[in-house]
Image (cartoon, rainbow, N blue to C red; front, side, top):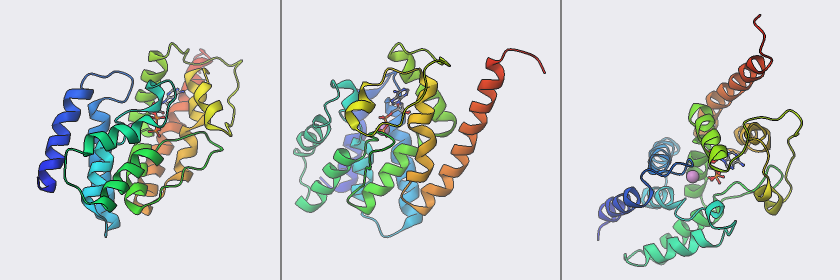
Length: 219
Ligand code: ADP
Ligand code: NI
């Protein structure tokens, strides 16, 4: 199969697998990360676009959050899926490494990507956790886990291990302090950083309004 056919066939597979998923990891999240990755990669230049596109398409193929916190399953599923195509080894490994390395693991835990293509896909995935879409996804995820939206008595924490980050059951607003507001400074590419700035400002504005409305008095 030629590259474009592999991409098309993967798109079809993911539409079938992820349509209608309601925790923020639906097909449209994948589609946005795919499109953003392509557009960042074009601006950054000099990328293996097939690796960028396949990494973006497969990045959430088996998210640890839905497999009891097991972060080994994503790369295994990706390898299994890719084995039906003929892809040269070096590129195959690069795609699998993207799936392996992409996830956020806590504000105090570094998550370095081992390829430039991976840096692009990680930026795209993080940008989709920021801004207006990020706010919507965050509350959708919190709701799916039965979390409250806010509890002023529960303070945010800076997680220094993936284990501690995964176990958190804090109110959804805390997630802004435990992850989302930190993303701006963890973007890899110049293109990602420019877009991240805009999305970051929107989240700050959202939080400002949230606390104002929480006070429940007219001014
Ligand atoms: P990443 O792809 O960087 O690993 P995740 O898969 O952890 O991102 O997150 C997917 C979406 O779910 C994001 O919008 C993220 O902010 C949201 N999310 C993850 N964990 C939580 C949480 N504890 N509370 C609320 N939203 C969350
Ligand atoms: Ni994702």
